[in-house]
Image (cartoon, rainbow, N blue to C red; front, side, top):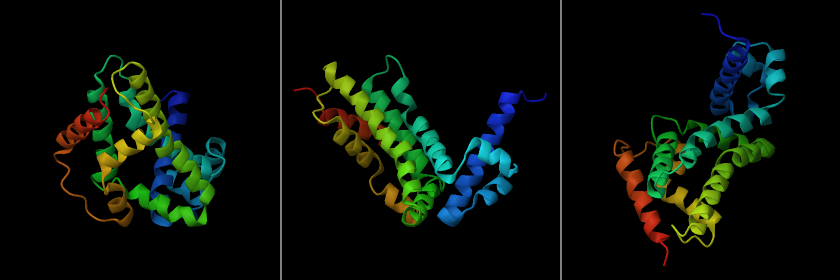
Length: 200
């Protein structure tokens, strides 16, 4: 069955983002728009129509990751510990398993040569995730479910508890400890975090 025009556009956009992610890992900021278009199987005009520059591509890639990581925040009526455990498990899966952390190496490669691209990636990805988690923590504080005097610091602390040295291992291309127990680890972090910020 043929795709509708909107589906075709989305398919091309996803192909561009996949190609860009691969090339950023391989070449960092030296990856060219022409190479991205070629690998994605689209014309340069199609690429520029969707993403005028590499900064826009990096921002879109990071936003996709942030959306996936923070999706549990949108679960209406979910218990706070369950929300945190779901975020933690997604973080572990995205950063610490199956070579998925390779994109972090790409960002590390990009940073010295293209600081504006690195900033866009951080702001739309990890930075946005922290802001969303902090906003959610603010809501929990107002509801009296948790006591969170500085939600931004607490959100960063949560990510640090989940990943430990996961970011560093991914940037260095080192193997991660076995992540088969990711769900148990995520639940343990969520429980400890809730306990640390329990209302007095």
